[in-house]
Image 1 (tube, helix red, strand yellow):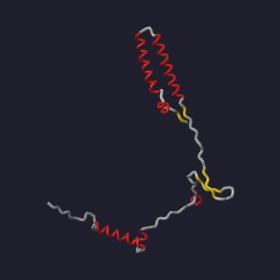
Image 2: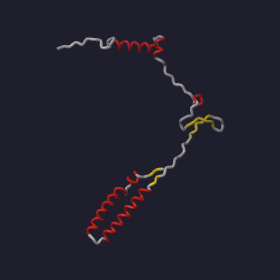
Image 3: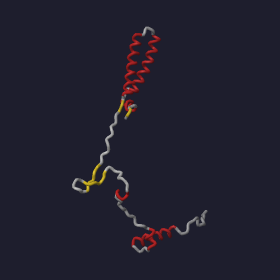
Image 4: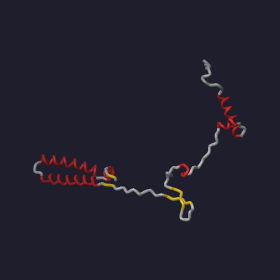
Amino acid sequence: MPMEISGSYGCRTNYVEQLQAEREKTEKVEKGENDDRAADNFPVPKDEYISSEKSDVKPSGLYRVGQDEDGNKKIFFDKPEKEKCTADTDKVDLEIRKLKEKRQQLMQQIKAAKDDETARKLEKELVQVENELSQKDNDAYRRQNTLFS
């Protein structure tokens, strides 16, 4: 069953007519046949250099124009101040050192233990210390917990 849609729905002219009108406008502009009103609608973009002296704004870059000993213009490069950064891993190293000392003490206590129950408790504690040590005694953990200043 064919349907017919009627109504303007805000369209003033046909789409083809709109395209034709736009083509004619662009052709006139390209040929130079435009009048003063068309020139007002299409301003010509211009780039303009404004020196830092006229604009009263300090240059934001590291390069600046100056004069050398002979009075000739020269471009100077202003080097930024070098920042010194120190990495401190002392806290991590101390933590790892304490874990290793605790592991040594637990091993000695296990060897010296007379009771099996205390030896099992010490072995459980030793396993926990070794797990923590294996997580912390690596480069990734050191990098992650390094203090930079």
